[in-house]
Amino acid sequence: MVVEDEVLVRLGTASDLRAAGYDVLEAADAQEALAILDAGITVDLVFSDVHLPGPIDGIALAALLRARHPAVAVVLTSGLPLPPTVEALGLRGFMPKPYTAMDLLRLLGERLG
Amino acid sequence: MAGTEPRAPSTATVLVADGEVLVRHALADYLRRCGYEVIEAASSDEALTVLAEPGLAIGVMICDVTIGGSLSGFALAAWARASRPGLQVLLAGNVEKAADAAAGLCDEGPALARPYDPQLVVDRIKRLLAARDRRG
Image 1: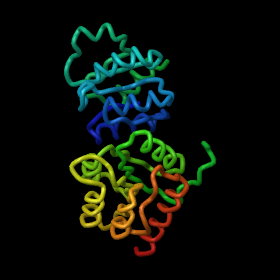
Image 2 (image 1 turned 30 degrees about the vertical axis):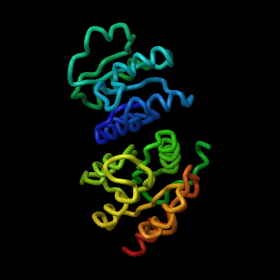
Image 3 (image 1 turned 45 degrees about the vertical axis):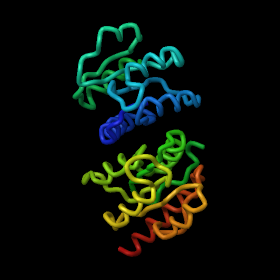
Image 4 (image 1 turned 135 degrees about the vertical axis):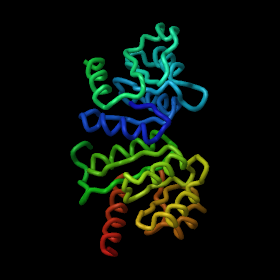
């Protein structure tokens, strides 16, 4: 699942992943991501921007997922470094922006095993 | 249902503009399985961004009348009709008055009911694209 509020960025990332054979869900913010997961739709990995609109940013989303959906792997992306406090969130990876489709596919391939 | 969906007769990109993520995802997923390229927009602002992108040739926009954002679903449909004459617009909603207003905005027929009947949506898309192709 790609969580990204910039629609063209989300579209590009989702298209790259679909072209590589992944089933991709799209969420425009953390609330949408939680709605998908809380509905029981199976998601193996959440790839989320840190900066999201609304009360829940990507780091808070990762914390909520660790508590509510611990089986879901979380990879965050941002143009800025992550704060040291994220170590407690058990992230499966971090992708600095800007990234290429190749960078992303390599990382997700490793993390999804 | 996977593998039983009707295939799209030709390549067409469909913009699904709906603020309810589970509704949007279900329809987008079905349309992709039918062979359509699908772009999802969670608000009217996202839909406007997509429509303004010159590299994205959108054939059909399905727009929920209650979508959030700077424009209502009706205003988005009106803007699209005025600014993108080649774009086929399908309004969707379950509000009684929406159907009346939609009749004047849609290229064909009344508003789609929500929650969507995916097969009905595909039928409407096919008819819209066929009519567009006939008009040349």
